Length: 84
Image (cartoon, rainbow, N blue to C red; front, side):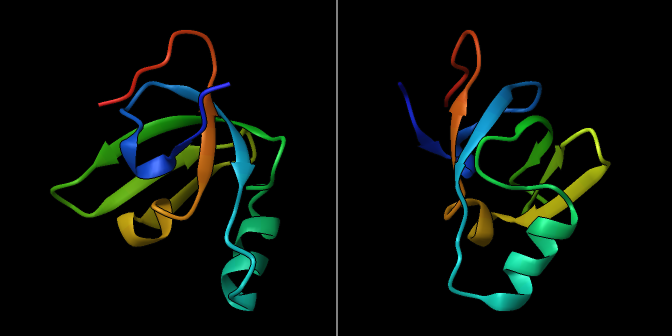
């Protein structure tokens, strides 16, 4: 399977979250509270490099992360991979 950092995925792609950074407690709590966990499917709603953020929708709502954080979230595109 093709696993890539979230920062490489374009808007409109559905992904399965593979790995999240677990070394920062506050960040991990934010992910858990917003259902951003390995095995969860999410839609990359908006990948906006010019704003420096990626917006994910997990079904529980929108989750906004910086590109710095998105580099450390590994995902598998579902269906046709849309990678830059």
